[in-house]
Length: 362
Length: 127
Image (cartoon, rainbow over all chains, first blue to last red; front, side, top):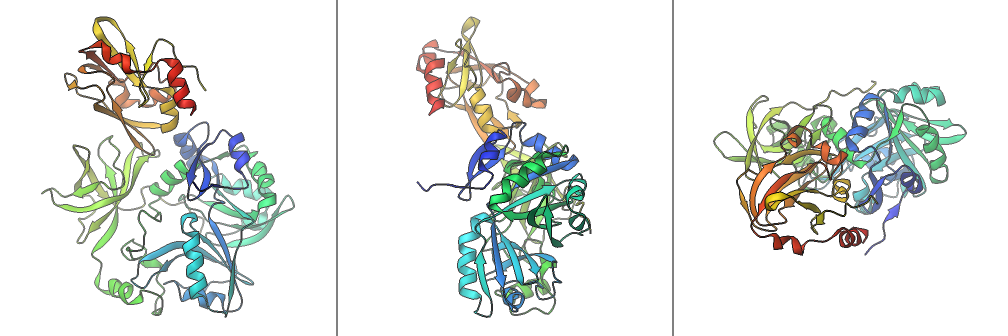
């Protein structure tokens, strides 16, 4: 049995009554005392504090850092202004997705945040494909937090006017009570909010400071998942994997016009011109029965036309919701389809994503 | 760890069973089980009148994260289901020993002998 890693906030999670579960090689809080539904609603109404220190943080340094990373993604990385961020994907030669990542332009190069479960393969991928025109390293002693929700801005305003002045997908260097950190206006809940990268040794101090604010409560992985599902955002291993292209995943917007030299460009650019065999959709469940990952979706005549990639209960809507990958031509929004759950044919309405409008501060 | 009611019998699949009059066995899930599952959002109840074998899957409890099967601790006929849980599955989170899920009229009460008492179940969940 492999031992699980702990984030710098491990003891704080226990103190807060977290239920810890193994996740991507880490012991992580799935929820705290009041439970996932409460945490979810708290984040939508006030501010949620998330420990996301399990995620990988890399630096790609040198003058050629941006052009080197751009060769591995379909996106515009060289066009990023200093301290601007971009959500993108690393693609393989078939156009499938190795990981979804966020790249931030720094003065000295790029900071890249990757999924915890993909850290090792991303590291290998960078090692093989980044040339010696840049150098990269993992930031092992760095924690990462997210502060998400409508009250997040007022909290940040108290500590850093620079950070409070950021617009969505921009970052700055800041100090919160003498703790140096990199703060970006970003997140993965659909809410306005911030992500804060801080040295591990200062992590607990900063976390306690943020959690001491009246509007802030700790939120675990359970609500992190239901929040991102309501926001219609992709989760690696569910909506994204090595066989799914960004176009199929509904991420065609991240392809830079005129960029033709990234891995899998042939297939991805052809899909942009000709369409795809499958596409990602949202489903509103017309029943109390949760429709979960793996459920087969059928049309009115009973033909299987796809499967659920993520599904669960939406605390904001008070009903189950799901995302699915359907064969094209997918039915129009508003169409009634069916999800097979045990011996039930659960009716679902195909709907536009996101389920809950994004509230980013652009 | 919360105290386990001494008057209940416990299954290794985390149901509790309470023998009542007329060979009726009331069934729910343990407090340990509801804590493991987290916030419940849906409970699929069995059809009243259904015949079940001991250990047969006959209900489903679904939390935000996962779906978990419930098994009848005894063979018999489903004679009542707690329909209040359809709209308020959170009652199970609030009080797992009050929020019963179904009642089975047992064919043979000796099925209860294979269940654990509070002490044995307490040891199981300590592990």
